[in-house]
Image (cartoon, one colour):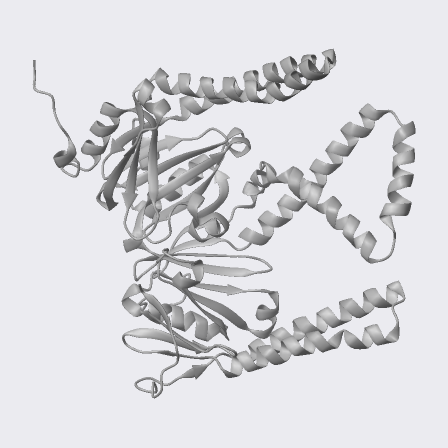
Length: 511
């Protein structure tokens, strides 16, 4: 393990001076505390709360501020030629260190209050993923913005060769606000609209507008006398409009000032953010490929996400909440994603364009159609069963209508997912593609593959299909060739990494 946590030993003051975090981190936390006190006092005044309740608000907030002050006082860090160390803790003291040779990333983040006070949070990542995310990350919250940048350069072995914008930095991509149109091509648009409605309800309840007893009954009385069709249509449109506005704002906040540069020391750095600024660095020696993700709506608009495939990070799916750490490009036109992919991989042509994907057999289509039929039967089973039990004919009609709808939609998705399947080899890369709701095309360097895993479930064995998975070092990176005939999958694996599977293959003698 590259990160350790031990009890603080006596006499650890050896080489290197121990440094404190920037004291402005306490002021930034105090500013947030002041905003909380003011907001709470305003709400209580609006609701007519008694004076003693007003007086009690600062007590827990000031207690949190005192704890933050003590945390700052008890936190020290130092950088030695071998490692970076952090000693911290109020109730439980800990001494954590990361060997410098294990450092895989240094990310800098500055939230709004940090930016006001000129400080930033530094997260040193090791790529180790065996335990919780904290096991893989050492956090310094916070340093002066200049000190954070210097620490990043020193840990990653950078040599200041000039300011950005000179010939020392190669800019691969910048934000193009014409890409803003892709923000609304997301399944999160109606969710954002619903979240806005929920937020409005909570706000009205907070200020004492009594939505449960006043507003909602009045709204229900009005709806009971109105024509339902226009009300439903207009409500859906309003929900989508609010969600679209929210998605545009979220896109602007996340990708404001986006810039992808190649640094002279051999690293890719992404900087972006309006309210919260982010700077993520990826060592090119860790880069193993690129993933293009095309969710259904975004694919319909000709756009795609672009993610780095690197050791120690896993795929975008595995990163879950941290997928934006591996993002190389905002949602952008597919052609731009191909161009940036070629630039990042230092190839003349993007591997996902130059490859000739081998289509999968119709056994994969039949499997997906069977799954769609099973889903339709399960959906219809509940109302049909209730209709037979209760002798209710309308429930029987609901059952067969819902079954037909699920079968029709499921068949369309099954065909779409089947057409998306493919695999191939081009130059230094193997390419695999799969997915319907989210089509993923992954170009993976062949020399980055350290092993193969062949999986066959019972329904696979009946049709001769299998799932062949390429694995990479330093993380949970697993890249699948789904629903491929077993002989074809093994031929693909052997062709991508000659000799790696040879000892496990048994060849039939020629007849």
